[in-house]
Image (cartoon, rainbow, N blue to C red; front, side, top):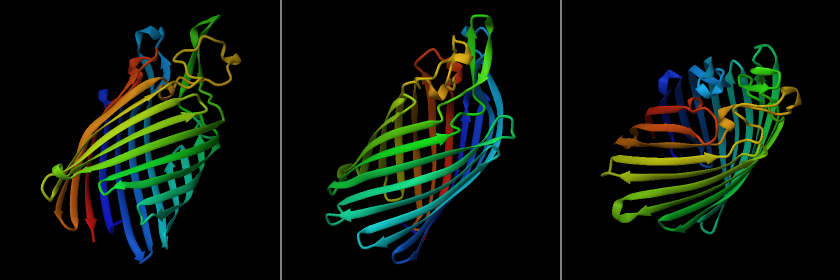
Length: 347
């Protein structure tokens, strides 16, 4: 860790002017005592544009979709204290995020234990979020609670090779539906369709495994970081993520970091782009494209310039694309450009 303050601006812009998000964030880290460090982040998001409801212009074969206008401001923060006690590093944190229709408050506690001359680190932690979701009528609120526990290990395999493995288990309950997403039903007696707000199960469990290896190459003055993540939940979604990032030093003051990430998931058991049953007989249903079978690709690069020992600037560009693998209309899936710039002060 280093005493620092860093500012970053990010601009996310979907093709066809569909959705735009501007994010301002400030991160700080300060050593308070020899064994006590404070860390925190402040975030301000501006969100505007149009997002798919999950329904189509009839007939659905024409591929046109209904969208709803979105405008929101999100203000969030997270704060944590890290206490070093012998070979333990104990961390405790709080977080809060506010939007006009969503409020989240969270707490976390973790520990990292060093063994084997600090070549092995065992870490574990637990967190809980107390959330509230406002319904589409803009009046009623419903609770949503989530708990996650993580256990993992980091191992120095050689002076130039580091590997880590983590396992996370999560549990959510409460109002888990998206109040702005809808599902469309076409069934006997209703050939022109019936639209209902989606209903998701009120409980969900998830399991996540993550493997990461970083290898440094002396001759190139660079390192390669590779990762694989497997995700599964009680909705029936199984997903894999593969990531590769190359960290290249060019001289003593320039770092170039190109990277690519590939993600693929199966659909939730209650997902359909169009339902051919009477909604009165359906228990759970959603046409939210994020629950469909799809893959996404994220690729780009970041450039960091070390101006002095205490000042760094950086900038980056990423291209993000989603592509469907089932009968969901291609127009549902976003494609976006993501730009970032930042500055970091150290002391």
